[in-house]
Length: 138
Image 1 (tube, rainbow, N blue to C red):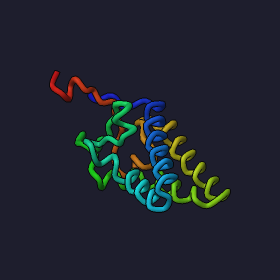
Image 2 (cartoon, helix red, strand yellow):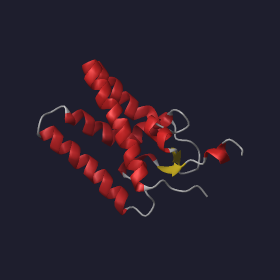
Image 3 (tube, one colour):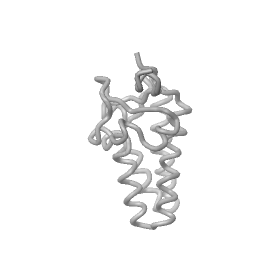
């Protein structure tokens, strides 16, 4: 059985992805924001279910049937995060709403017996620890 990813690792992986979006936005302005949102939406459906943050922390997003997350599931599971990122661009009220969205996602994840946040429930996905030796056949 595949081991579910720990809460800390999941949060750090998502924070890495959000920092990537923030840096790209600062460098490329609005086109960077659009590119960053696109990245957040589809990243878990690329690279065998692994965003850059998940690659660094050896995590992987899979579907409930055990297969790797597709772009479709990635979009579904990351819609709430992207909404928060878009709202961030509106001073004060957007910042508050961003933290509310992230806070709700975190509380659902924290209280979930199955280790799922709202996005995972919508997309029927979960995040696991990726064992490189098993995957590489060693």
